[in-house]
Amino acid sequence: MKRPLIAGNWKMFKTVDEAVSLVQTIKAGVSRGADSQIVICPPFTALYAVSKALEGSRIDLGAQNMHPENEGAYTGEISPPMLKDVGCRYVILGHSERRQYFKETSVFINEKVKTALKYSLVPIVCIGETLQEREAKQQFEIVKAQMEQTFKDLSKEEMLKLVIAYEPIWAIGTGRTASPEQAEQMQSYIRRLLKETYSSESAVKIQIIYGGSVKPDNIAALMKKPNVDGALVGGASLKAETFVQIVQNATSEIHIEAGS
Ligand code: PEP
Image (cartoon, rainbow, N blue to C red; front, top):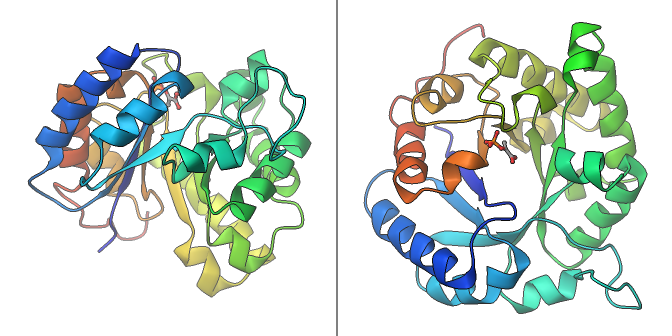
């Protein structure tokens, strides 16, 4: 049975005190119950305090971004060793908000993925199409091109150390979730591309999670799909109650639908 990976992306929300209080409540809420991998990605300013608050718990810490160099004159940036230093195990890379507002390209994200792996951080790499691209029926070619550039020159072994997050941009923060069928259709396509490029054996092991308006009431249906291995949760991770419920509901009825 698959073990869901549920990651909360807090974006640019929460002061240090608010972050610690939120993570304490989440920690208490997920201490019992079903097994899943849980990752919390607070803003940079709260990473150290949240790392301390998470000590001894089963929740991992992640960052929302990083620079590809290990140090240097890059004002305002944070490096992979700095993330390791504060206790991060994961890092979100290539989020659509980074691509859209900060003009990050797949080529730049490829550099970040390589250094994250070099520093033993697990990259959660986001890919996905815009509404315009979906309406023009270009979603498959867009995702394929993003994958080719973002994962360029990575070995089969390196691919096994990262997580892919399929995040259709039209579903992020909009309340408009991709249907479980739409998520499965794209994520099985991603898995097929991985099989073609690497091996069948490694393709089945790479975790592919879904992100885009995931809520307590839609996670179970998404998780039933064979190629949905978990979720990247934005808005609904900012409240302990909804995030804990997503974690619990993610494992509530994992019997995989045949032929999806
Ligand atoms: C995200 O930020 O990655 C995300 C999926 O946001 P939301 O859940 O709010 O759509």
